[in-house]
Length: 183
Image (cartoon, rainbow, N blue to C red; front, top):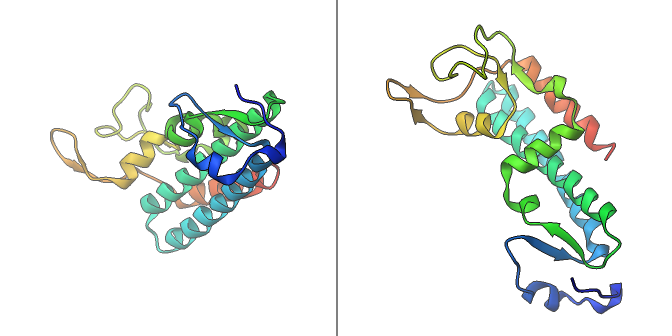
């Protein structure tokens, strides 16, 4: 791992440095800037989602909420990387930037899981029964984001979206807004 004093890094070196698939080397003094930018992005995603919720398009609003959740996960991962190392630059695993599922899962270690359910009237257990066929609860996840965003065919019918309750989605948005202030 390379070690540099803060003032030894220049923008050209950072931009031209080859990236590995395993990690990125980020100057310590730039990590907080990435955290702050991610927080701003969370705020923007949630603000946009509220406008779409008001129009009643809950599945499209949820897609933006899930993007916000992933950005929260990125923030948590960047803070962890900063806390785990005294080196400069800080090694940040590539998944922080590329794995939707990893970021979402990391966010839920910080967010209260009671807000993860966005539809609570399912008759069947989502873990056992296929939500494309049976009415199940809907939980916030990478998979739900994909189902909310894209038309699919399950072999017998066309599908778009998942069951989402407006009040539960609004509660999740509020929870994320409140939580991001504490990071």
